[in-house]
Length: 99
Image (cartoon, rainbow, N blue to C red; front, side, top):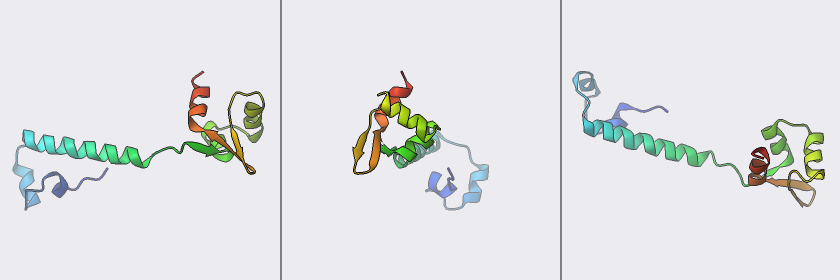
């Protein structure tokens, strides 16, 4: 996260004055609010899709295509086939890992 001093202290025209000023409670409150907004916006960007393709599941779990096929065959991991593509629900993967 790269914060410019103007973002933290919009009321200050000369940034050099910050070198000789005490940090106030208002400054800390501004920083806290800015930090919370940054965290909220970054967490929204990293949304995991609800459905994953086989290649994505293999990368996520670091397994081979054969291992993924075994998980499908023995019913450990639920899947949906649409056309020729197999999809896995992220929630099901998460449940399987937590068992």
